[in-house]
Image (cartoon, rainbow, N blue to C red; front, top):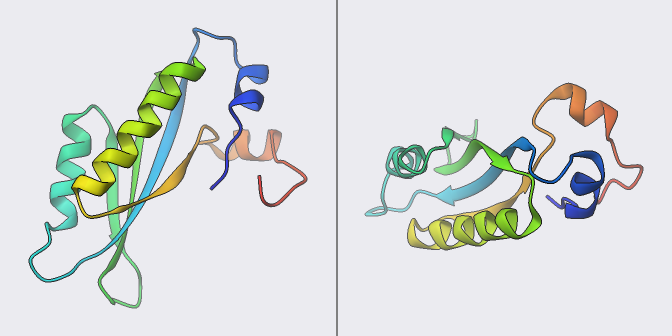
Length: 116
């Protein structure tokens, strides 16, 4: 999931607060921490988090974490680096982030480029 700091900063004033979402995935191997441990750690860090296994029941899990963050590029970059470190420590993959956490934001700011 590719997001643009430039677009966010263009649409939201620096210093305002914006809800952001971080996305992770993980295959649950024998002996690895259950997704609940990952959710608990995210919640300890102030996120609202949910985990769900794919419908196939193949042990592949997706985790979404939401938190309000100041609109500041350096702050957001730090949050994203910390998310990547956390993913590694929990045996997960960091899949990306978005600041478009509502349907209205997704519709209003939809990029014509499907890769963005």
